[in-house]
Image (cartoon, rainbow, N blue to C red; front, side, top):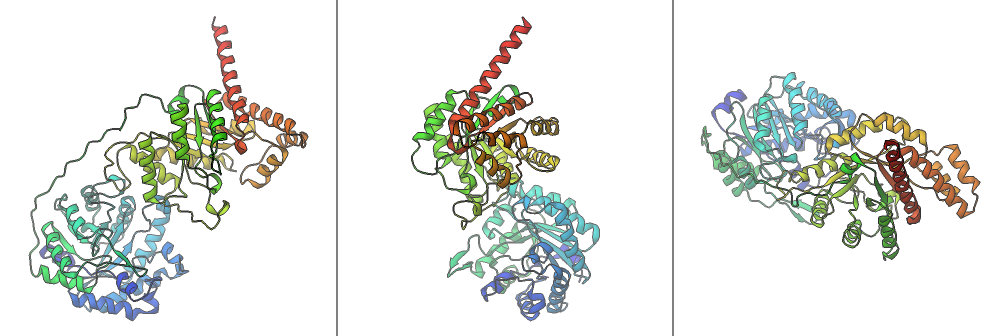
Length: 617
């Protein structure tokens, strides 16, 4: 049989899940390793799907790439596992079904998991291993990231003329992540030479049918669909179980056919019984050649509130803008915190920045304090958001909450790992990297959730990001800045710097950028404080002159304070000549230090204005 000829004539039935059956039998380690250790188990499952009516058997190689196998210490077995996977499926098929080599995505929903060059190397290794065994075709499946799928499809099509099925996975009905509509994605995959394009995993039959209702029949390729048994599994006795009955799955297969599906199989939760139900329901029914498209109305969304006030990043492009970080308290009671916030506001600070459990230690919620600051003193706080404490769901909920409260100035940071904080056993989530989260906030500003669904309104966040100049190769930090700008960052706050030469270096390295930089300056409080920063804070080295100045103050707190303020003022003078943005970091909640420095900045600026005015006259 010729696969392409058969696809022209009839509906082909795919197989179902491999992992579901293995999982149900108590196997929860590396499924692909079984190709080597227990090939008979894999062959038995293939045979069951063949008997159920499958026309296409997929090799047990979904995660058989370098990075996924490395988790089990099997990275040297990539070729063996992939070749064995094809061979086992071919033996089970016995010439009665097509054998397709399966290659799954390397990235999850995070683009930052792996860069494209890493994925290329891993994909080529897996691809070449499978091609040695001469499969009847390839299936690329469960790709949430269209960028990755497009790249690997190009590689595969350049390397082989075999039939290729390319399946994306949807977060929501009709949409990939980043708001890409399913039809657009399938058109792009068809243009790259896929023989069949479609969807698999994550959604059950109902939502896949709805998604395909908006997709016309491709001009050259055919539609492929592998739904889960149902959209939502149940959690029973410590295991996830899909309860959808096979008859419903078979009934749904007819509706999928009515939407133009030419290949219909199953993904998570499906078994040979589900595939047998598909075979029975479809019988000898012919594929459709025409269909009516349902065009759902695209919601036009506007910002919740029209902007009238300049954002901090906009102000910092034109005039001096001062930010002061004042950490939320570790203990209940905000009297002293509010005293400091009011003093700083009176001193001319443009915004108080509120860390998000800095140093991985629990503090009063910065959202609570930000709301109070905005209400009681009219300040627009800059809210830090870390990637550490919230998963994908929590981050989106958090952003919607900030928008609802009118807290629209945000600083996106990775967040210190939990192991350095007060509770080292706590979990660090990191569903998203700082790059991913910046992109997500930007997408919220377009009115779209991570999955591409409408939020009902556009948010109006102003996005700041972190910049660490305290590294050996400054150009690497600048490259990260440029990447963050591409993701949507509109301004940068630096970690504290302690030398005027470093400020000059940062200026020279970043002067080609048009994104405002707030130079970080933190007053030292004692020689002990200075030595701790120099010796124990990674990446920061204080100049000898600074250390000697702080040492000369001895244990006298008044002299130490004076030296710390003098050093900070010298740094402020150097930074003010090159940057309009100033970022003062309050040490140990001693707001009187940053209050004095804020007043100093305003006084120096006023003095310069007077001098310039006098010269002009």
